[in-house]
Image (cartoon, rainbow, N blue to C red; front, side):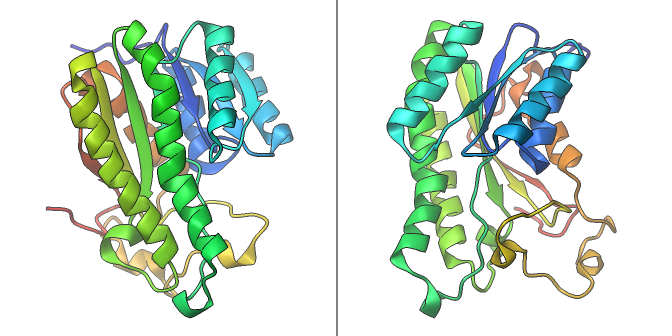
Length: 256
């Protein structure tokens, strides 16, 4: 039986895009399980510091590291910061994402490339940099956060869908190549969630007038819902789960 009161004690996790929303909730949830956290954002230093303060106030360990995870050197520095502060890396949750809505005819190469860089290339950089530490510590877990639109389709999001599906394929490849080192890799897929989207009006999700009507469980997802799933997947209760795509959407999309 798995003790879920402090099951991640001694583990170190990096959660990208953890200044707000799902990333923030996930970092706090992993901290409550005993994990030391590296809080990451590309520029939201004040919000990252808030998360660190909240975790430390509850007796946890956390540091904040700003890094552009699309850049290999920045990712290497991020991993080095975790190793310097806590001795290694056991868990990587790649949550950071772009969410702009742009019709294909208006989609620039730069916007398309940015989505690919943040979904696929960043995941590659994170895995490359973290795996040596995971191997040295006897194993680890890599989680990629995907979106439901990449599976069921969505207008004005071809760049986002391409990036998330590419990340899904990479995660599956990592699961097979790294299983020999006791390193697991899974993707979690977010449904319609009630989150704050700041700084770019075009990043607001395209929804029906009543989005809850298409969700069998009758409500929007909350960041804590995804945090709960991620805590399970990175913990000892999921030690036989790898290479999978796990959905958290209230029944809005049924996966075979």
